[in-house]
Image (cartoon, rainbow, N blue to C red; front, side):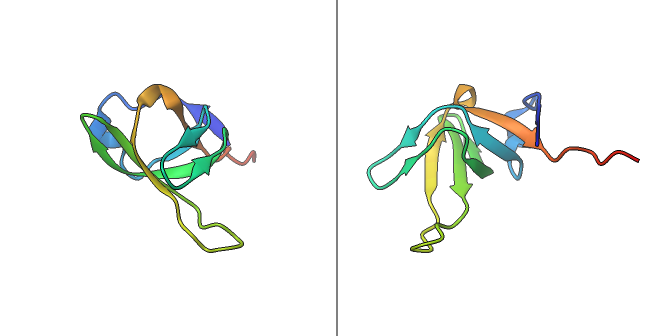
Length: 81
């Protein structure tokens, strides 16, 4: 995965893949730095992120109000040749 610049418009965040740049916590879950998520919503207060389901309990964490400085946008590496 390679880091790409943030989209210029926040409405373009939706559907993009991101990686966390710090540990994120809420009342239910703690997400480690470097976790991969998908942006499912954007509001003036921040992004809503959905993470992959946990392998042991199948819980799918959702965290909202995440600031742009706490995520970096990533894309798969282009295959050579």
